[in-house]
Image (cartoon, rainbow, N blue to C red; front, side, top):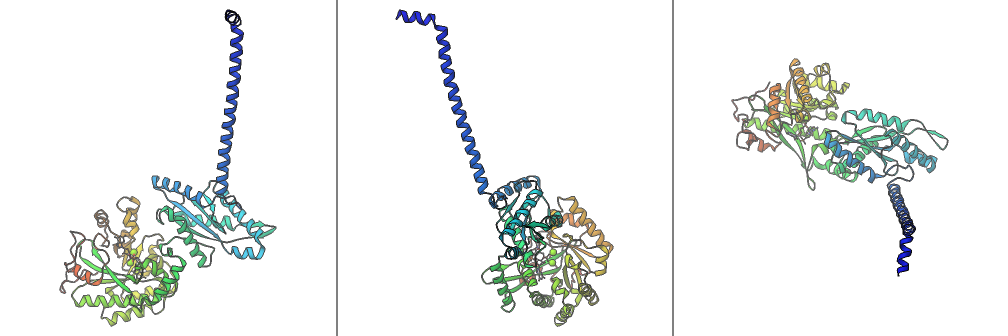
Length: 499
Ligand code: C2E
Ligand code: MG
Ligand code: MG
């Protein structure tokens, strides 16, 4: 034992060196193993992510698939919410792709898809904002707002439509594009579907164009044809109905007019909005018959109210298809005559986008309405496509009806106020009456009155209601929506303030 102690003390330094050397080797070996394992783990993670990336990618074009796009879209929508911007989803379908596949074979079809995918992803600077949804359909999103859709469509058409080489063939393809803009055209989970519906509506009308989503498209094709079948019978089965929404004089707060709005009481679906079935009726040639019924029914109702002592003008909405039909004004005057109504008591509301058409048919309809003394109103004025002052003057309307979209913004947006101010000034210079629609709050009402609007219409005063309810309401028996509101006098000796 003493020998061992002596040996240790004599060789302490050497032994210490040996032990620490062994320890270092062990540590180094452990470290290496640990590093090796870490490298392996990170390689595994990379492989996993590559694999899931591959699973989320389309094997033909390398573009991401729908799920990955939806995730990115959710992030973009959250960012847009935070900074008050818009997000535009574009849905592209190649026109006649099946015919190309049939004519030239799948290899040519595949080459076309690869080339288009590479053009789109190149343009979007390689961000995963473009996906292939299968077949010949692509979806992308960007931060273009509603104002830039035409320009965006032009850019996409040019990208896709430029000549391309596929298997030694020189080809060109057309594309149908549908847009849905967040937040106006739906919540995030519906955006891609809505843009798809818009794309399909372009295909139905021959393709090679673009359209923005419209709620009327929100009916799938089976539903669409069922609805159309039912709509063909709706008139004869007495399922159509008119409800009436008053227009109020901005200063006296008296009822000056009631606008007739169509409702379809569907036996299974309940009440169907005119925003769904009027465009359907327009596309399938039913709107003239429906429009003629609206005019006849509104005139009958107006005469009945007049008999009962309720004096106000009645307004009907006129579709562009109706306006363009040759006998429209004659039929209208017939209805008025049958019910003993003077023409100036009927307002024809025609939307601005129809009024600016400026075709011989619409010009002559406006001229005939003017000659007949009908009261013409330009509806949804300022909604987008703005008619020139000179054009409006030529059409000779009596009234401009400011679009509800402008009214909605008027309280908080100086540009919206500036537009309304300009519309009122323009109307003054043409001696036109100005009505603001969609008035929902007292603050909006106050701004509109201060800007000089003559009449107001909106939920603040009254919602559209059946004729008998309106009669009660206007005579003071019904529920008034606003405490300041004074209904028109239900008294034959007090004429409503008609100008
Ligand atoms: P429009 O002529 O511009 O009618 C105004 C629409 O706004 C109506 O919707 C009305 O109910 C709604 N509205 C009224 N006040 C307010 C408000 O304060 N806030 C909001 N958010 N909305 C308000 P409705 O009845 O669904 O009609 C929609 C459109 O359908 C009409 O727009 C018109 O273009 C069309 N339409 C309705 N009836 C007929 C018709 O008989 N013939 C034709 N061709 N089109 C019609
Ligand atoms: Mg209207
Ligand atoms: Mg309107």
